[in-house]
Amino acid sequence: MNDAATYALRLADDALVLSQRLCWWSSRAPELEEDLALTNIALDLLGQARALLTHAGELEGAGRDEDALAYLRGEREYLNLLIVEQPNGDFAQTIARQLLFSTFQLARYEALQGGPDEVIAGVAGKAVKEVAYHRDHAMRWTLRLGDGTGESHARMQRAIDRLWPYTHEMFDGDHVDRAIGADPAGLFRDWQAFVSCVLDDAGVAIPADGWHPSGGRRGLHTEALGHMLAEMQSVARAHPGATW
Amino acid sequence: MVSAAEAWATVAAVPDPEIPVLTIEDLGILREVSVEDGCVVVTITPTYLGCPALDVIAEEIASRLHDRGMGRVQVRTVLSPAWTTDWMSEDGRRKLRDYGISPPGQTLLQLGVRCPHCGSVDSHERSRFGATACQAQYVCRACLEPFDYFKDH
Image (spheres, rainbow over the protein chains, first blue to last red):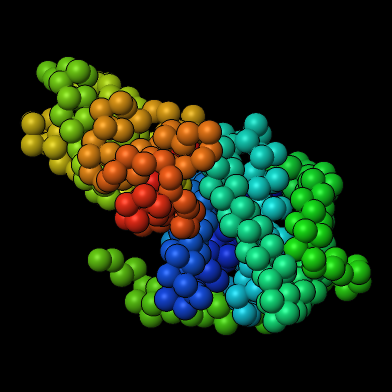
């Protein structure tokens, strides 16, 4: 696959995998409004993923459409960041993942708005408005949980501790990022400023940097992704080419 | 041969499937209608990227043009420039209010959104996400009724 298609696929897979994760909350969120919020966020991400998958397929030029790329690729062909595939955990862990990733995703879409790839720039221009809501939603919940009861604070802290190591990979750019899109290393300063401000206000301690897992961009994933894809792809694989 | 103006008039009346009181022209998502070599080309833009209504809208556009005898139709989707609620017509805003959804751009000094039932601005946000991607949930403190607000975007 050429670099341009690879880059579009990375953006698409980040959005698609997180969308699928968030769908799980439908009917399981702590309150009805939250059911709607998380599924709306999932829908926004799915919309971004569909446009980017279609674009990746066209750039690749091998005749794969959005469905072929979403449903017929194995785990090792998925190029998403490890953080988005992490299990939902409790509600705090889902919110922590949203805060850490949405802040990054918003900065990345902002940087891509004026880029040379017209489709990616068009998607980014629309997505910045959507993801601004996602980040805001995560920020409000982080403040509520972190600065809430002893139990909610402990869970928020545990969630941030659990996911923090996966944030390093977001800023590990390679030649594809730098050649086609936005160098993620350049997004770190703004990301860190926003996230540390929210965590400070929420009374959540920023974990020490240590373990630094990576590999998502090369198709090397944590155990969680394969299980998720098996469920997500089961109908498409059981009934190839089915339409309704 | 059909003119672009006739074709526009035909597709402009297509309703939004999620908020059927609005047409796609009211919403501002109908961007352009042209006739190129006998083919009617209709350009639309999504409100939100994941808007599930877009496919239905494209089918309805093609179907109405076919009914008018315009056989060759192409519906194009463009993402840029990005849709904004500024493109919603005044007529559309009035229809939304009459329908019970507070139209966008009604925030007064960020204090509250005007309740479409009683007109009070003493309202508060219940959730930033609502029944569709483009709405938020509010509650009026004056008449105590919940209502949807079409978010500024």
